[in-house]
Image (cartoon, rainbow, N blue to C red; front, side, top):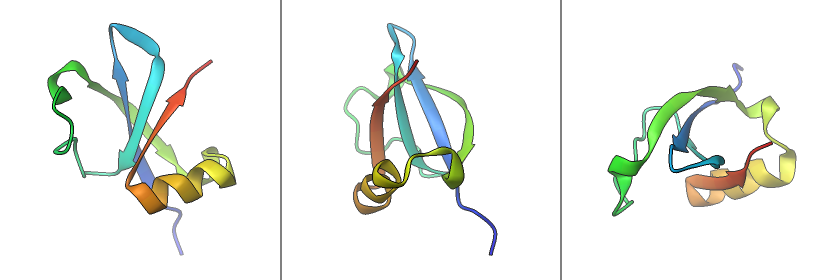
Length: 66
């Protein structure tokens, strides 16, 4: 089974905050979706297990980067 891939979005006005969503899901639930830019992709094994559970349960995950 291939690992799941997630999209990583960054808010340029707050570049230390990342938003992970399922690959291809986009940001339909965010009122301010236009403030987020697709930065790249990450694989599920790049996300700590406890955060991966939250991401899978909620469909998204906000995370402080760096």
